[in-house]
Image (cartoon, rainbow over all chains, first blue to last red):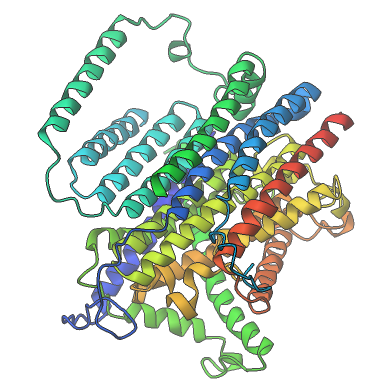
Length: 130
Length: 167
Length: 336
């Protein structure tokens, strides 16, 4: 297999960005002053640090994603060979997917796929904020 | 040509591996780790295992590193200025040193068999997805099915641990 | 002097790569103009009318020159090293996808036998670039945008991969060229119509999820102007901004071109008697058609909320793709 073109595409992208930045350096004005270099915050003085603690949901989603990503990596070699391997491989993969569906069902039932935490019982949801 | 690529890639891989532990800022460490994973992926390509290379990028660089970045942002570990404790450092050195010794001893005692792919060169279909898939459903069928239970355990464990830590 | 064959093939590859880069730049300029005109006409406006005379055709060129001449501003609070590297990573990840696109039967960068999987791999490079851009900017909008973008892109990577598996099963190969060759002989052989209705479902899931992968409306939450200013590239200006923009538009083409390749017959003509028209024309027009659909959707549909986005991905697309995949593979196995 020939991977040289892949390398070339990476190199071409790198070169294009580099050349444009050099051209920009040569052609564009440079007049930085402190006010220009402040962080954008809708015209206000920046308040506090943006590096805050992020919501745990991002982390849970990433964890679940890792598991499913690994599952998908098993599916590709199976898909390529399915025609030659036949029914046996199909059953094997069906079992594989079934076992992992238990995982998905578990996460689903535990409410970890929910982006918005369930509201307390006395809260009456409207049609929109289900 | 191949030797040049190999040397460049391994030097970059080792350098970025070192930077992972030398950098103070965890985000920079992770980005160097990503670079190390990429160079390893390129080495896999040179070893005629393009599928494993793609897996390396998708699973490690794409999924696990994003998870690491998320965790760092979640725990707000962005700026750790104080040095880590000496006990941890000593422990780390001991563990890493032992691993190095074990790896060296094992590698020294392993002789490369005369009929290994290493020496006789590889055929056209070596390391392709087709070969990979065929051996997955013949020789390694049981490990493959066990992997599904492992993944199931991982997903349940992740959710349980996340719940415990976060609530 | 005899030039070794390797050098000649390397030279051909270099010329091809340069050609693709030129194509990408021209395509982005054209798309930029089209997007403005289409959005304008859909909203009963005119859009650019002055620059260049005829319907403001030179507007994107003028904009490109303007971006090149802009001052390069790196905020004082930003992590300057990562801030500079991020556009490289994003653009490299986006352009690398072109390496496996079969523009015609012999017009392909390299026909990797992991073609489809390779495309997924380079997409995950973009995620890292976006997170770098968002984090290094040290700006609230950027970081929120990057986090949203990353979680959205990784979530939708699973349905995209599962949908792409359907044509892989049908072709028994991940090589782009082989998948296209298996769809020869008229539109009824295209994978979108074969093994109906599963392949059609796979196509719809792929296209829908790929909109989320390339951060296009209605999934453009990461750069939702009304709440996050410009998402992960809020702090970027001038030429560095241009590369995020370029990456986004070339991503539009890549996802459409992959849909055209694996579902819509690639460079094959819809009818055998039309095959005198060169393959590249068919390929580019199929991809361009899907790009137009993306624009149409952007200016028609309202933006989703984060919870709706995650709901669609994990609770609708994911189970549906799994069931769909099992059914289509069962069909293929039973048919022998």
